[in-house]
Image 1 (cartoon, rainbow, N blue to C red):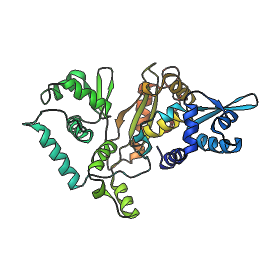
Image 2: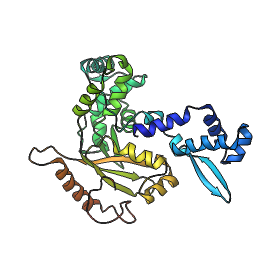
Image 3: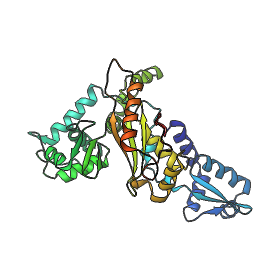
Image 4: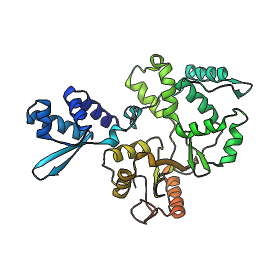
Length: 325
């Protein structure tokens, strides 16, 4: 989600009258005049607040003859709170020596002789343990389920729990019996450690922030957004795989995605039926420009998957930059 979009939502919610309007609409859609009567406000006041909520994507408006009917946009309101501060255009905090020391301390506390004694109950420590398991998997490699089990079981008997939570927390993706490491997990790691050392990580100036952002590694590659309900998928690519999923989710949640077929299925099946998978990443080669290597990767996967027609959401069969397909 973009910083500006998140700010619009937060500003729209930071008003008692708008919260009362949302509370009323939680039960059913309503007319502007009906809301004014219920809240004992003038029609112009209610109209002003409804416009703010609509601009933020929190409510939708439809026409019923001469009247406007307002309803909640459930997709946006159902997003977890973390989506509103996981900015695509914001820098991510890098690990420093103190953060790495804390990670090692957690691992040492819960692992004895390289065997996990128990899963932490505290969320941030639990994520560090999961990341420790995730580091066993190589990005870009496809693992069979028995391979995943064999890599986890020697360190923890309840391998099913670890495997499930690695998927739930975004470290692994699953397609049938095939598993892939989703990389990199910079957002999740930053969120985990930022809670513990918030004051230590505060950056004193915009210059520092820009410097840290420039140092943040980026990964180019090809991804798919898959509808698990009917098997259709959107093939896409990006020079920086940190951001596409959040951008797509926000557009879909607010009803403004450019791909109408994908938007229609998102509305019909619900967000829970869709997953984001990184299919391949560009390997570093000093003799080949990243964008050129990405173009070749796009062409390879476009030919391989043929993401058009009934099986895919992509719009045509012309090989082109599909980053914004």
